[in-house]
Amino acid sequence: MHSGCRMTLSRGLRCCQRVFSWVPVVIISSVVLWSYYAYVWELCLVTVENALEKAVYLLVFHIVFLLFIWTYWKAIFTPPKEPTKKFLLPYAEKERYDSEERPEVQRQILAEFAKKLPVYTRTGSGAIRFCDRCQVVKPDRCHHCSVCGMCVLKMDHHCPWVNNCIGFSNYKFFLLFLAYAMLYCAYIAATVFQYFLLYWTAELPNNRAKFHVLFLLFVSLMFFISLMFLFGYHCWLVGLNRTTLEAFSAPVFHSGPDKNGFHLGIRRNLEQVFGKRKKLWLIPVFTSIGDGLSFPMRMVSESHNPLLGGNQWDDEGTDDESPVSVSRDSHVILEMDT
Image 1: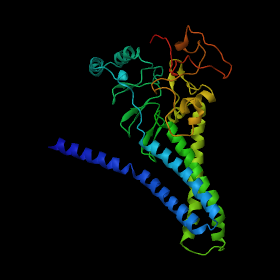
Image 2: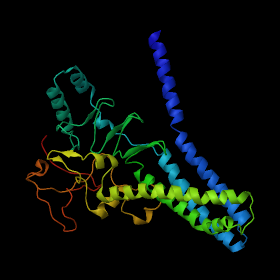
Image 3: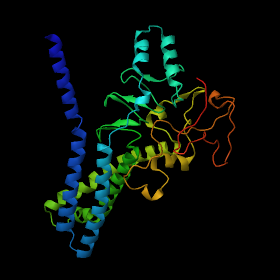
Image 4: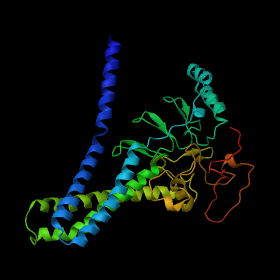
């Protein structure tokens, strides 16, 4: 009976958590809906008198608004990608792993299973990265999200403002959401400013539209400044081919931690997220390279990296160090013994 009560309470708490996790999204959506009403009705249809100016304002506004809403929708409802079944520890190995009490033997079991997997990053102690909750060997750049309750490929962070985990499957959408949100705020602030001054100096009548126009400028500037810092930070991460988690804790390879382990040069780093078809970079459709399970790595000295022993790589001269050999779909191809 007590266990049943605990289960019921646990389910109720999880349900409440899921409901409350949508509160930030509801807040942002409410602000956006108010801004749409205030701009379209109170500014363009009530305040602006010039017909041509009104038409131009409305046309450009709706183009920016649709791009902003589209990217926000994609960031929210594109599910994070999990490791495939080949990373799942088989039942026999799982039984051996769970029944074994010696940590060194557990590490050996994982190492034997990981030999056939494209896994090159390790824990700080040099062991195979394994998730006890999901029972999977973690692919490179994969981490467990405690909020989503799953391992996420190339996890960047869990964002409460989109109620989603940002990772390989939706990182491009998140970046475009930030960019178009900035553009949305900047456009509103730029077009509202002159009418803000007219209302502020009492050259326009003191009516209901005045309240909306004044707050449109304040709110748009406030969000623009906040988004500018966040977007700038993620641009810096993309330029170095790092995730937010990797920026705080460098990935560990056989040779040790290397914060630039996946840095391929700015052009290749951008292509990792946005793809090679530049005409699709600004459109919220998935174009990222690869499958999120393995990634090309930066070339490092063979004397410092046992992964590359016995291999010769060409120096293209475009970056300080060249990337490891990459397959047709930009996955790593490395022959090694673990």
